[in-house]
Length: 166
Image (tube, rainbow, N blue to C red):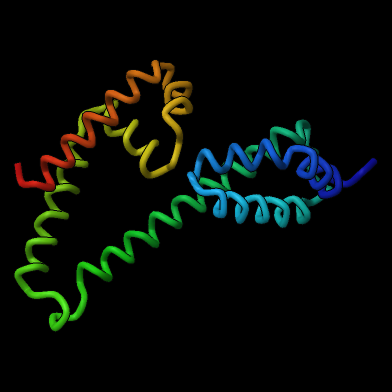
């Protein structure tokens, strides 16, 4: 009987194109998806043979989706840190007035995002922060893709209005 690591590695080789497409849909980036698939390979190679895996294919896909979600969250965190860096540069580079205006704009947008009604807030978060496609969100929430599109459009309009101070 082959080990879990061998079974998952063989399955990864067979399922790689489909896994890559799935992860790419989550992240929206081919290079990031490649990184995640490589991480899946490393994780699969290290799976203990002591535990029983009833459905190796489902296990492999869940592993890929979880790693893609983690990768997306990390990218979002990095982007926020980068935004903070540019928002709060040395005073010699950015004027105090510009800093205050940027901070005020950011505060308005964050406040508006916090006040988005449900399910608009959940749909927007799933799409923009977790990287799910509109079709995936529609399936997950059992609504139409058009409904998802309308909620995302509504959220973007509210955030744009808040950014402009309206």
